[in-house]
Image (cartoon, rainbow, N blue to C red; front, side, top):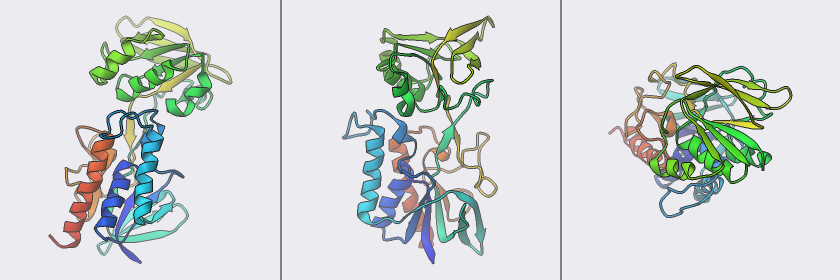
Length: 305
C-alpha cells in the first residue's frame, strides 16, 4: 500500500498532524518507537501554559492528544525507524523489524533526546542516581539531597518539582543568570530548600553502585568543591533526532532539520515538524501548530499546488 503520508513520531507535533490529516481525509500511518505517545511532554510534571487547561500533568496532556487521534481513527504502528530513502519519488521508511512503509509524503516529527554532560561517572551511574527525567525518577529521592544541572526552562521546572519532594536541591548553572523564563526563575529562587551554584560546572560524578557526590568547578576561579548528593538530574538541552534523515534533508550545525513555518524541507514532499526543526521557540503549543501547518503543506504538495 502506498499511503498519502507517513508521520514519524507521536509527540505533540505528530499527534496534531495525525488529527489534521484525518480531518483532511488523507491515508496515513503514524510510526512511534516508544510504547506510549506524547513525546517529551509525558516526562513533564505539570504544564501550566497550554491554553484552556492550566496545571494539567504532561502525561495526561499527551494522553489527551493521543485519545483525540485514536477517536478519529488514526492508524499507529510501534517501531523504530532504521532507514529512510526516496525511490522514484516515493518516500520509503524501514523499521528495525524489516517492515517497510511507502508514502507520497513524510512528516518527520521525531523530537529530540537528552544531551549528556559527558563527564566521568555519568554513564557508569546512569540509572543509579544519574537521571534525565525528574518527573520519572524524582519520587525515588524523597527527603534526600539532589542536584539539577542546567539553567533553561526544563532545568528550572525540574528543580521546582524536586524541591517539593527533596530535602535539599542544588541547581548547577554555568552562567550567572538563568535562561529560563522570568516567572519560573522567580518561583525557584523563592524556595528555601534550593541553592543555586552560579558559574559552576560538573567535573565528575562520584559513586560506586550509586551517586554519592559531585565535584563542581567554578568557571571563573577554577576552584573545585565536592558536594554530597544522592542524585543528579541533568537538563542541559536536547539533541534533535535527525541522524537518520540528515543524509537526505539539510540540517543546521546543531542537527536541527532546516524548515520554515510551512515545515517544508529541501526535499519535495518531506516535511519536519516540532522540536526537530529549526525554530525560535520549542513549546508544546508551537509543536502542535507545526503539525497543523505541515498537513496544510502536505495537502498542497499532494494536489500539485
